[in-house]
Image 1 (cartoon, rainbow over the protein chains, first blue to last red):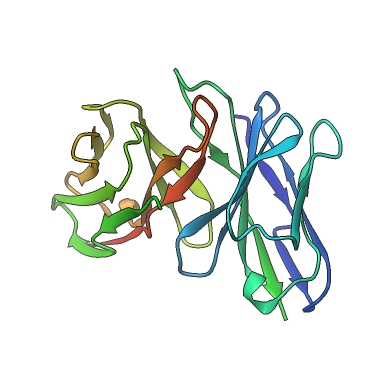
Image 2: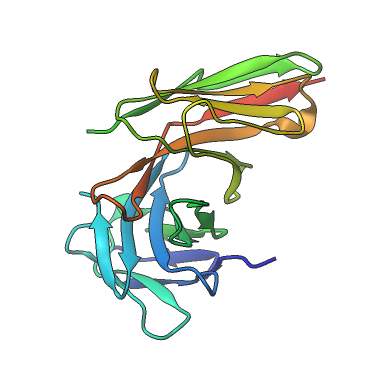
Length: 116
Length: 115
């Protein structure tokens, strides 16, 4: 069964360092997303990406964040200068664009980012 | 601002019992999603509810949607230990008509089923 894959599963980084989280969405999907979940809290939307550009972003997604689809398969989230409060589980998700039949988003296993 | 509220946030129940989790939301969205999350794991899609009056069932779980009341319910029938997890409802926070929107999640209901 097709699935969204994320690497690495766990990343530890020092405050101020740049990190890149990687995702391979399901191959025929057109919409890609990043969400985050701070430990024990709810899942929060960061950004959606369609047709090689950001379609929506939340207030969390400030200038420290960027997304890219560098090739036909990968979708990345970069945090330029990490802060302690960026520590969270980051989920990548993808979906087909079919609002009539099924707009279900499939989530990857997540990358746990720990900023020390 | 779109709000999605779930209750209860914590639910401890005995095996064999029935219970309902409620999800209220504050916009006119006609699409609602239920996800399950096991500790340290990803979000597993359970139900996609696409219209008013939609009802879907899978095993011991049944979800329904009332768009007029802006309410969805997740009903658990004869709970078993394997259902222990956190359950999230989510609504699309659409900004652009016709395009895929982001998901706004509730805080989740942590369900613990005890023998």
